[in-house]
Length: 339
Image (cartoon, rainbow, N blue to C red; front, side):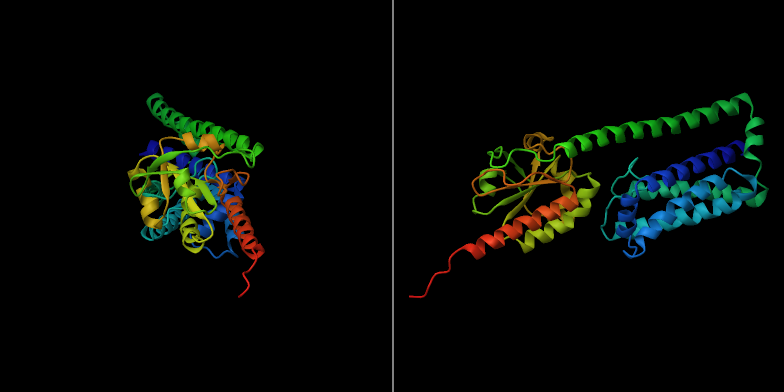
């Protein structure tokens, strides 16, 4: 039992330490996550700063004898609060990015997120229970008293944790490089160049092509997404509202990838229209869209009418620009005089 408590204290300290540091380094993402979980927007900046500090305090406290019990209780309460918040959001069908570990590892909310928090809470509960039975031992003195077999298992467990962290860091580095590359060349295809034609399976059934999307004589806003992209999941509800509100001015179509099953939750929950499915990223690559979500406008002549807009904020700005241009064009048309 002594080895288990030592391991749990170290593991929880590492987990809370990583969570705290990565949240501090990703304050923008942390603020977004806090707001998405239901915090008032005015409190989000303060909470985004205080939360990682609390996690770092818990991480440090678990390593010292005099603060282990208080830190374990704080960890249990914080993890319980996370579990309740995640459960409420899942029950409401909200699957925004959790930003649990900042940019190191951020995925849309799901039952695995809830299960992970409950497992961490169980570990904190065991430490709290054990420190109620007997005083927490000095963790460094306890490590010195471990036998060879105990050191083997403890070292192996820590090596696994270190391997997971290294893997996540390398994966995040690859994503950052891809994002940086896309940010350095955000224009995509030249303006007025012919938009690459495509014909893809439609989520609603059958096939749909670029020509069919332009057949109504309206500009086309193409938005490249994927079913596991956290920012995309957050944006889907807005996209549905855009499709309803601006259907007379432009066509808004999503190009995702994967199977109908993989896209079912997002499409059904948000009642998205005009969703096309590429096999991998073949169409996105033709348009130069290396990250998701990314959008581009194709005019009624089938030519590129805008630079690429990468990210939710840039897509919103692009939409406003297109709608403004469309409104100006309508105002510029001469009005017929009565005979």
